[in-house]
Image 1 (cartoon, helix red, strand yellow):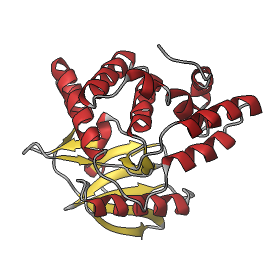
Image 2: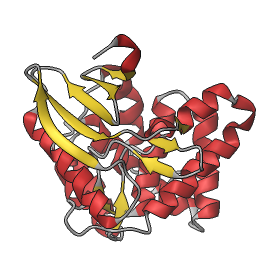
Image 3: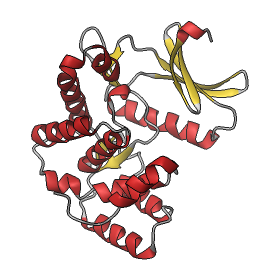
Length: 249
C-alpha cells in the first residue's frame, strides 16, 4: 500500500486503491465476525441489482483482514460538496434521490431493522421504563421490508463521470422501514454538527418521498437509542435527550 493510493482513513481501517480494486483493510483485532457480516450484507445487496461496487474477495493481507471490491472511478457527494459548496443543496438532493431509489429494492435475506432495534434498545443501558416505552413505540410502527443502508451520508455515495451512482459501506444494511433509515441519516447529520444540512435533508426526503414529517420523526427516539450502543462518550448526552418518547415538532 503506497501513501498516494490511500482513499480514506478511518479509526479502525484504511481504504486504498490497488489497480482496478478498492481494498478496505481492517486493523488487527477488528472483529472477524463483523468483517464477514459486512461482506455478506454487501453480497446480498449486490444480488438485488442495486448499484454497489462488485464484491471481489474477503482475504488477508499481511495478517490483516480485508474486503476487496471493484474500484469505482468518480467522486463522493461529500467531495463534491466540499469542492463546490455553492451547489451543496443539489448534491444533497442527489443523495436523497439515490436513497429513495434504494428503498425501492428489497432483500429478504437481510436482517430486519426492527429486530436489530429491539436488540440495541435492550443493550442501551437506558432505564427499564424508557426501554419499555421505546419498545412499545417500535411495536406500533409498520415493519416494511425495504432495503435500508443504516449509514446513508454523502461520503458513501460515489457519482461517476457519466452520472451513475454507487453506494458504499453496507456494514449496517437491513430490511425495514424507509422512514427509519431517513431518521438515522438525519441523526448522523445532527451528530456531526451539520444542523442546517440535517434540516435540508429532512425537507428533501419528505418532499421527494411524499411522506409525513411527523411519521419520520416518530423514529428519532428509536434510532437515538439504538445508536447509544456505539458508546461514543461525546455523543451520549445528545442521544439521551433524543430518547425521550415525545412528539417532535
